[in-house]
Image 1: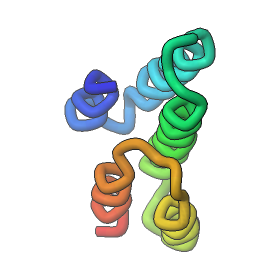
Image 2 (image 1 turned 60 degrees about the horizontal axis):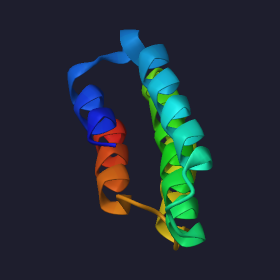
Image 3 (image 1 turned 180 degrees about the vertical axis):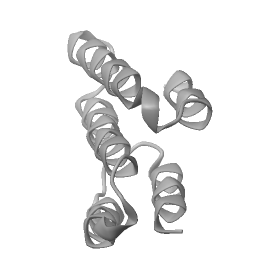
Length: 96
């Protein structure tokens, strides 16, 4: 998970496919993990879902602000979400 954070900061839009691949690999490892509770699995899977949306939105021109706002509302309304504040922080950087 920390790797996704670091990669977000270090990799630009040109490497978005790498970030998407890493998020998908993380998702698969969560599905295979038998140790996490159902709530923890749901929380991590929600994180990867929104993380992938962020990566895709980052590639778009600023004209898609309504999509950014829609994603922001979805994240704000999600109750089971790991690193919610970090995702919201990244959305705010897209709004600028």
